Length: 260
Image 1 (tube, rainbow, N blue to C red):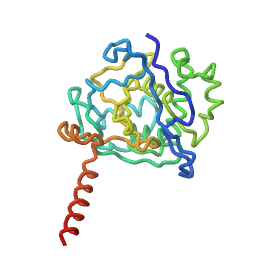
Image 2 (image 1 turned 90 degrees about the vertical axis):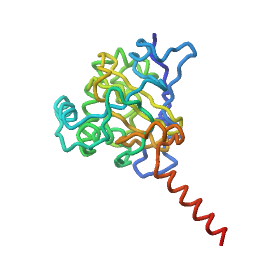
Image 3 (image 1 turned 30 degrees about the vertical axis):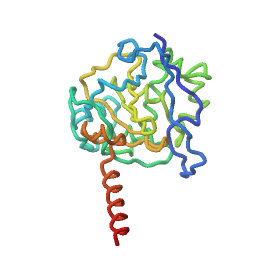
Image 4 (image 1 turned 120 degrees about the vertical axis):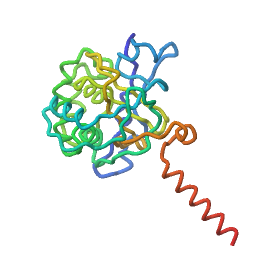
């Protein structure tokens, strides 16, 4: 089965402008276009790289030992555990509840990946370099995502991917998933759905810890640290309990004011 087609308009890349200029922010997140005959539960579809399955996803974030193993694989320094609320291979993935912010300077995906792996965003430049070095090793599997470029070399040069503050997207997610041989999950708040990025050249262990990010306002990545209970998720798609509480407080305050 061929990989899902992905919109390659650079404006659709989730990230931030260096100067926080809203005019330069992307107008929409990356789009995964699948045909109606796709069975997202099939192994073939999952192994192509990107899956938008709405069920059977699990929440299994890393502990300190896993983070250290990832750091060793990438030759990075372990800073600390970011202490996500631990799940397991059987914990159902609902919607994000808690998350950790990272700088919105155009490097937000690399910042978020650095934080999820090392416990701090400060090694984002090494994350970028590691991804760029790994891309050529999986060029044949990335071809469907490289359009309109003909090679990884052309893509890196054309997009300026080796430059600081350059936005990142699906290709970088897929490359990091392949490099660490892990699943990376990204929650799109706009569509209330998870996208799972899978290794393209290896078979990740579905029972191993994964990386969980959330795409906020369609232009900024954060690191997920906890998920909502299933009951809360069913009544609040955002998974943000505090937002619900704030709304209730405003309603109560307005009601009291009207009574007076």
